[in-house]
Every structure is written in structure tokens, then in C-alpha cells.
Amino acid sequence: MNAPRAERNDVNGVLLLDKPLGLTSQQAVARVKRLFSARKAGHTGTLDPMADGLLPIGLGEATKYSQFLLEADKGYLASLRLGATTTTGDAEGEILEQRPVKVTETEVRGVLQRFVGAQTQTPPMHSALKVAGKPLYAYARAGITIERQSRAIVINDIQLIDFKEVIVKIRVLCSKGTYIRVLAEDIGAALGCGAHLIALTRESAGGFTLAQAVSCDTLESLSMAERMDRLLPIDAFASSLDRIELESEQARRIITGQEVVQPAVLTGLYRLYGAQEGFLGVGEVEAGTLRARRLTSQLQDKDQTEICLSNPAVTG
Image (cartoon, rainbow, N blue to C red; front, top):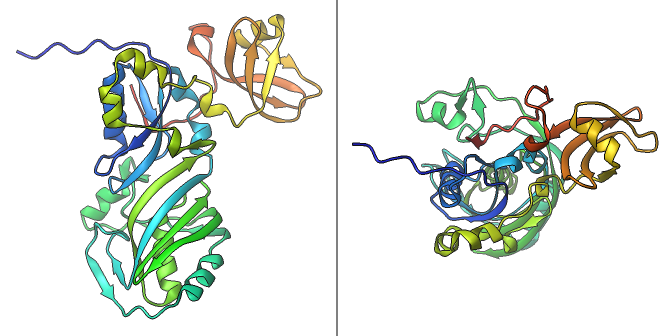
């Protein structure tokens, strides 16, 4: 006889999780979802099992706004092993080639600075990026290579933290879509000895930092009330957007799918707030007219059609 399914609740908010090594991002989401008995949860950017660190997770209504953190810059602490390349670009792959390492710290610093700025990068085959509904790593495991399009990224900063023998530790601030394992390979190629990634910690995402995060073990030890206290409000993912305070009539119009004239507001996306309702959702101003882009469910008419922002990492 099957055990009865656990009751799920409408839990809304943002949890900053310190994901441990060995856990996939989806496994981490499932664990958080279970601990909160939540109906819906989703993360804001995959961390590989060999990586740890900051994994912001949206619960309930907060998942609607996770796209804004997916677009945000990320910060990483990475360790590279010089002198060897692998099939996956990291320590989980088989060694392809080994070369002697004859580089100085000055040479390493010089090469690192070459990678600061706008550039293109080709996603690796061993990644969670999906093609025809299947992640690239699934094709790679089957011995199939898929042609990938290079995409524009920006490395805002690289700092050398430590260099001992063949291990280089760096801190990287980069745009969305940057693969640190590919960066490690490129750095090794530029140094002439090859390299692969052996450790990775995400330290920041948007305005959030690892210091604010809670570990899975700590979360397990807390009562439900204490876990709820760890949640940030549902508008946290959209905190990078400027806010617009709406008068009562303006808020009513937005909630019912109507437009609001905002002649003095610049074109772009905004967080919307009503005096009585609080956070309404996200709207867009274009040519002096404000329209809703994404509203919280409790404010919407069931028959209202809304323009949705995609979030491929949500589980309901």
C-alpha cells in the first residue's frame, strides 16, 4: 500500500541556500520544497554537483520573478589545476593530455587580465543547457556531440587569490551564461600548459551573497517557524528593478489588466506597489504607458491573460 502524499502548502518567498557538494540543483530544490511542504519551488541558475555555494530558491509566488536573478551577474571562487586537460573540463572527466607547468605568478596574472571584458564563449557538451528538450550532458554521455552556438558573455573582473605549484585559485565576477570550466580551459590554453577546474563555489548572485545563505543541514535542524523566518519576501528576486508606488485607482487599473499613464517615467521594467496591496508585481513602461507584465496570483482575475516571463527551472 502506498504511503499518503504529504500535504503541500502555499509557501511564498525566497530562500538563499548554501548548496553542498554532490547535490544537483534540482535535488537541492526538491529538498527545500520538502522541508517547507511547498507546492512550488525553483532555482535561479544551475550549480553542478561538483560545485557548492549560493543557490537562491524561489517558493510559490516568488518563482514568477526568478528570471530577474537569472539575468544577474554571478561571483565565483574557482580552483584550477594546471598541466592537464580533461574530457569534461573539470575534475570529473578523464585526463586527455598532460603537459609540464613552467609558468610564473607574473605570467598567470598577465594571462588572467586578458580575459577581462566582453567576449564569446561556447557552452561545453557537459552542461545542463538543453537542446531539443534534453541536456547537453545526456548527449555527451551517449557519445554524441551537438553543435553549439557561441554566445556573448562579460567577465567583469578576475583576481588571483593564490598560486601554489600547479593550483591556481581565482575570484571571478561574470555575466549570466558564463561557464567557469570553459574559462579554466581557456586560461590553461593561454598559459600553454592546459588546465581544468577542480573546485567551484558560487559566492554571489545579483545583490545576494553566500554569507546570507543557510546550509541544508541547518535548515533540517530548524522548526517550520524558524525556516519561515529564513525566507525573504517574494519581491526579492526583482529587487534590482526600480519601484513605482501607485495610487489606489492606478493599482486597481493595473490589477484588472488596464494601462496607467506614467509620462515622467523612463522606459523599462519596474516593481509595482500599491498603498493597500503592497507588492503587486512587475510592470513595463513604454512611451509613457505602464502595463503589467507579471502580477501576484492573489491579485489577478482568474480569466485575465498575462504576459509570462519564462522560468525553466520550476517544479510544481
